[in-house]
Length: 440
Image 1 (cartoon, helix red, strand yellow):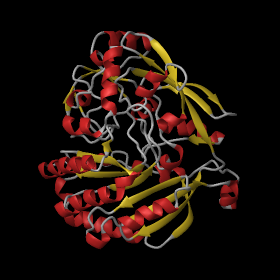
Image 2: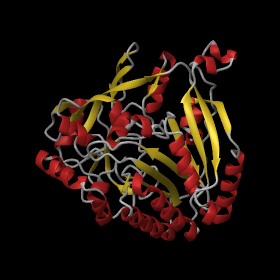
Image 3: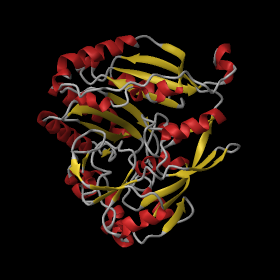
């Protein structure tokens, strides 16, 4: 059948199998090339194989929850949403979360996802006690920071190319309430935004919405969102009796694909103008429920249909701290001068680099969505070149258009990763469209 990632482009042909247990999974792996797929929330072609795509949704059991110490053991196909439903009433929250809760734990580990707190707490790999994965030999191996460490390091952020994760143990974050204290700070340009990030570097959560349509003195105009988990004394008395409960939300679906003409330069500029002025002026310590703070896009469950039938591409890079401001300025100038129809722009401060092939490095990461078009594809390739010029690298979970020469020039760790894949034998068994496109 033909499937795609969350960006709905490219649409690719594959055979999908859905093993219900380990015996069936082992059988599929031994039969040749494959790649694991969770809930299909990676944006491009990283979880689709030309030959066989192994859907892991049936590996969705919770195995043990240590409520006293905040340790959760579960299968790789469990959704983050279901994790939160289980642990939040007991006073725990995921240590790291991406911008959607509709991802599987296995996918989060394979992508080494990072959240709004990477500058302080690191990525997904930092909260994994151990993982168990099936190798191409049909063996189930447990690995961690002290046991089979090389396999552990290459698996976290390894995009499913070292084996298929079946189980994991996670460290959780203790919380007192289900609420977040949020402050919003309007910033007039990129330089000021980065200064604010550094000023609030001790805050647990920070992220900036960035208006990519602005130029010159307003280039990089942003709204910075700062967040902390609220304690009992921070919430109103009417919430204090049930501090770990939040209001139920109405989930909405987009019934149709929107026509491509709706997202144009005029409508994007209007949206960005209204969004900026909505948050203009500092608003300190507003209470927001956890769902609204971490997962605003999840309110519209199939928001990817906004981009129409052709889908969209998401560009995400990270630039090292020493080149971040000049590099981000070059990227934003290229985007604004092209007058592209980009809808969503996000800027985050990242912390220390992780082991393996993990995406983050200390610096700043810029994320921008582009509706699929020939013009925007050319722009994305130009952004890749600019990123490379300033020593940056690319997030494979979002990629659908990266070229192999740019990719290999961006990250010297690729040579060691390929050598490990060759020596372990995994290169002949675990392949995705992305890994073949990028010569991984």
